[in-house]
Image (tube, rainbow, N blue to C red; front, top):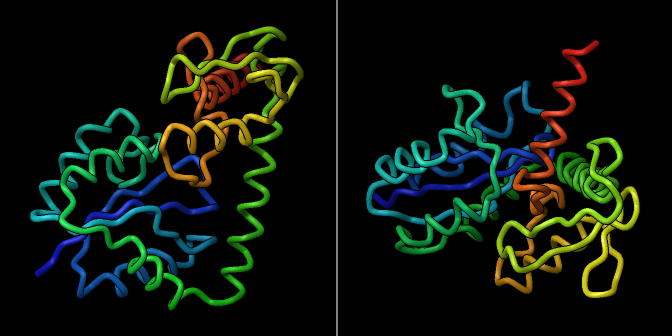
Amino acid sequence: MPEIVYVFTNEAMPDYIKIGKTSRDDIKQRLAELSYPTGVPLPFECLYAVEVEDAKKVEDALHAAFDCDRPNKKREFFRTDPDRIITILKAFAKSDVSVMAQKELNSITAPEDKQAIGLAAKVNAARGGKYSFKDVSIPLGAELVFVHDETKKCTVVADSKVEYDGEHYSLTALARKLRVASGYGNYNVPGPRCFLYEGEHLNDRQDRMAIERGTEE
């Protein structure tokens, strides 16, 4: 029986991805189980899904490889760039079934849920574009490095703007431009996840400083 390993996203949890497995015959039931418990505000979407020889072996390997990005060891959610997972999955893939998986999701997603997903995507994109450098103590003139290519760098020119190649961008807009230029998919990845400042992911820096401020209060 064909086995599938998938990478799912959820607009209610924009910083996380879910890595799991199922059989092709069982995928619709599995998607419904994931998307419609009352504790999940929005249905999942399929970012990538492939058929593999041994889904459990591949899933276990991915979970082990990215264990440091797994906040809860009893859950299949990871806080990492999805391209890191997808690159590895492509090496194991017998065939790409992403379109099939997303069609199955669409078939069980109610119209009101689709509308909610679209609204959440717009909100998350707006948040990504309004990342505050001041709030995370990154000064004007600071240099940020693109995570997929350290030769691509931008400069902070305003509280939520950077300059790259003579033009000004939000982090999300520049991340999309550089990801496409570097051969990565045009996925809905928040801009701060795609850049480093002094070797630290901007999202991680934001979380760390929020925790530090909380402990000081």
